[in-house]
Length: 423
Ligand code: ASP
Image 1 (cartoon, rainbow, N blue to C red):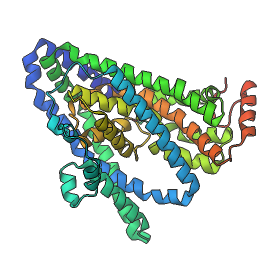
Image 2 (spheres, rainbow, N blue to C red):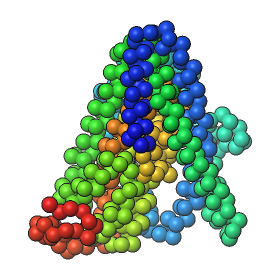
Image 3 (cartoon, protein in one colour):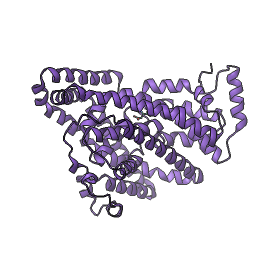
Image 4 (tube, rainbow, N blue to C red):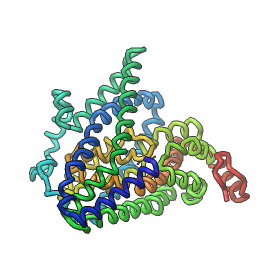
């Protein structure tokens, strides 16, 4: 999302709020415009998830080729992102950013697991493989869709020659096209958000916007915990490298990511930085590109806070079991993400649809996504070299001498090979 569009969407939020407060009945009357916007974003979800997963899973064949390193990489990614998802969940439970104003009366029925019934893990598992793929697609059964798309992707990867490649290319095309669709739809967001905001203000008053300020605060707090507590602890006690020195070495990339909201933009520099501090090329050029879609630490934190926020805004009180289901869903849906602006928001959208959370809260988050995206992208960028160091150490291939030499050079304030400033 360009800065200009982000600004327009934010303006839509503010103007909508003002109009809704001054003319509440007009605000309520334009709700259908907001609904059209919600439908437009929902429209893209299933083709997007399906095609991205097929393509993502077909690439897992590369992982197999990488063998042991691939496995260690995935284990590291999963453990660290799951810890971060849980931190987000705890913070959202502690601070309740979305509680207080209920955007709509709880459609408890929407959220199947909230119907009062206990989560039955057995029947949940039994129903994951869909007996009818088309039925799963038409009924938004996201777990079944994820399952089938993943299996299909794995199977396609085994199809030799042109036949397999053309299927993958087809889904790549669909995936790119759906991303374009999302971008187009986002151009209608200023109007959609204006209408939703006017409706919310007209119906519930100004206090409806307090949660947005709270969700920004809670997300930034969570990201600060990741940078100032989690990473330093992991680096000190598990990896035995000085985290803040490493962090300082990529401060310029951190700031670029913060201002562009695209971690892809700094990927090449991240790879050469990791090499410069002692990660072998084979590991850095594998772990970092893969990490762009599998190891987004900042985005993971955002996702669990935001998903809880959306549930809270919808008036749903999730049990521990339901929150765990949501985390499992986030673990799945966040795979295949891209290091591009707003990718995390799209993942939130798919997850909210998957677990049946009301989408009004998601639409309001679109209005402030730029602010959240800046911080989560910057944290994503720090997570990549940390992961590369972890895998290299685990493989006993980390070159401590290079790390020491790097610090020496920095002390002497020589420019680094990655182009990162060393002041
Ligand atoms: N913008 C983020 C990145 O580039 C992804 C996201 O939207 O969370 O890493």
